[in-house]
Length: 167
Image (cartoon, rainbow, N blue to C red; front, side, top):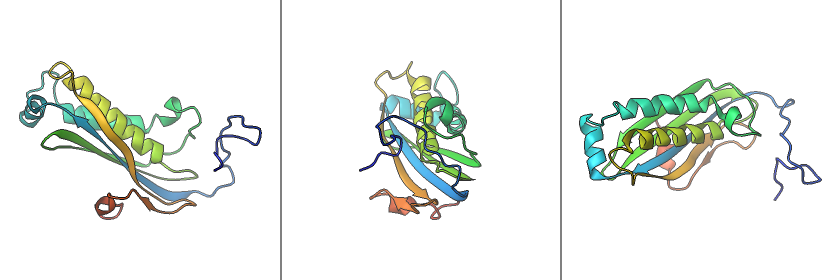
């Protein structure tokens, strides 16, 4: 297996995408925040002392998608042309799903994953006064489309593939 961020001498480098043609690309990711019933009830009825946790998480995720080159040293500066962050409450967790789109020379998988991660961190930050045991789990890329390698779906996530919902 050849790692793309290592040259033939094993030195780290930023992959040169200058000659690649821009294509439409999309990626989806998700993260779960496992938390207590007390927190989930407070999220449902809007009584978390710090305010609207779900709105803050959505905004934090969208903002994070646009900051990836500042956070990951070998990430390319690309256009983030669309970013969605959805936060839903389940019986034992908060589910954060993201979709990031662009028309550029490289994909948006890291942008989608960063959006999910930072949105999850925002939830933790907002509820830590109520539940210090809240934890982020299952932070994964679920889908990607476009580019040289085409479409990919993580096994078990086929029902939420790009195009199955409004993109």
